[in-house]
Image (cartoon, rainbow, N blue to C red):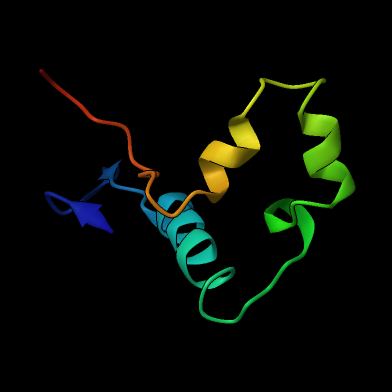
Length: 72
């Protein structure tokens, strides 16, 4: 997407949009229980102790927002 008609001021929204699609539709609509959305998978079990505690739960919860709040 171009902002103000110049290539130097591009707004890249693909990664955020792709993450939103994967998070909202991959688990709930199709019932996939694989990879990071699986509560019994190796990534989830390793994530409890190796990485930040609870980060996989935060990603997989339906009530959490994938977007960071900006401003006060």
